[in-house]
Image (tube, rainbow, N blue to C red; front, side, top):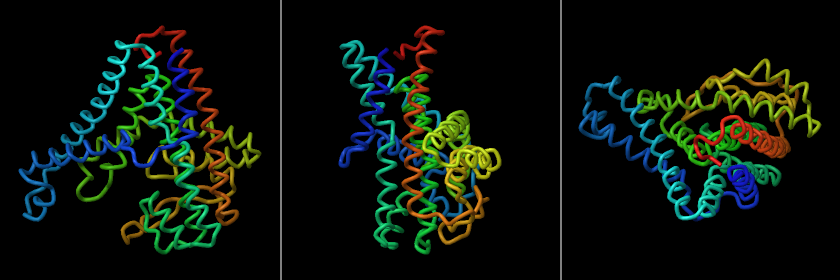
Length: 341
């Protein structure tokens, strides 16, 4: 089946190549459209930019901002889905082999296994060298919290949290949506994920216009986040980590996060490694209280970054196998109604 072959090949290419530096990634294009459409909608609401409206003291139009957020979400997600579908449709008309090559390339672009490991290991390398300032600089590229005052353990903890959470967002969830809808649905998910990372903030400007993106991201990640947790528990067992601890902390702390999905994999990682994640951190100079995840059995150390990346890789391989079976089952039971294989 073409989709299964594309999924396996795209997965392998991602493991070998990762995101190539110097090339424009499709997610960057999605991000550009998000920014331009958001700014256009704000101008439509206020007759000027949001910054100008704020400077002029114009009254806040919360209802219109909420509607604009839904419009933005629909345009970006459906637009991404239909653009990728259209490209693959035209490629199919030219030659099936061309569609196969393009879909494989798109799947490779959607996945982020190697990139996640590569970027997180930059922090590991700095910590191993004793370069705390360099480690703080590297982790600042990966997290939103203030990093200037973090000690070595806190930097390592932030990196572990990033790997654990993005195992779901950057690998497991994309594979799940690719399995049921090919590259078009996989990219539609990436559009949702990009919207969430760009506009779903509880700050003054985005709290209303980002509402729809945040809710859709929660909905789309509901099943994949839990699938990711199960895969990570299996990975913990295969790696001979504390699987009993992983299950116990998952059951206890899987909702210990502002998001209903983010703590699922963080809880497994914390339990498997016998460490504590989460807790209060500073954002833009202000403390943001968050519940802790896991038990404070020992301090987080930089070697936990490597251990979490091992969980990432084994979880990714397990999920690939499950998703190939899922695609096969869908075709076997439903035929090929969406022409996804």
